[in-house]
Image (cartoon, rainbow, N blue to C red; front, side, top):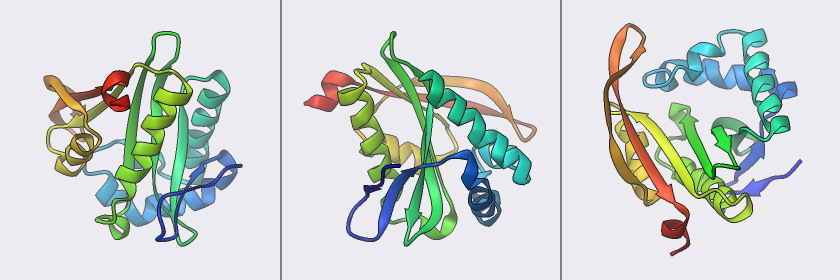
Length: 181
């Protein structure tokens, strides 16, 4: 297992594996309402078994080299994470996502973790395009995309149904030459 420091504040990025389902579920319980404002991830981990299944899905993606999930720990407490929802290395494309519980916001954790992930995808895996798909209503996530130097490609109007309400989906991206410069 690897641990990547995210600065000097005790924050770390680590793999998130199925055996950590209890810790992951407790984290989701703490942040469910906040996390679930914009993403269905919180709704999917509704109990210990479904939390384990979600982490197993990402373990299977890691084994197939099509995705990954990592947790963000602050002072040894799981407070959020970053993931590669879709990874197609032969096509040079990946989509990343993030989440954070409310007690950990405003510390730059997501931006730092996402930078590590983008850097790994581009420099180590040779991905050419990293995508960030976000509800137009999710201003904090859009701010992270901007801090990462991503460009807004467009808006897919009324693209998905979330908790009974149609949502616009913004597509942001970063290309390898932009990252390397």
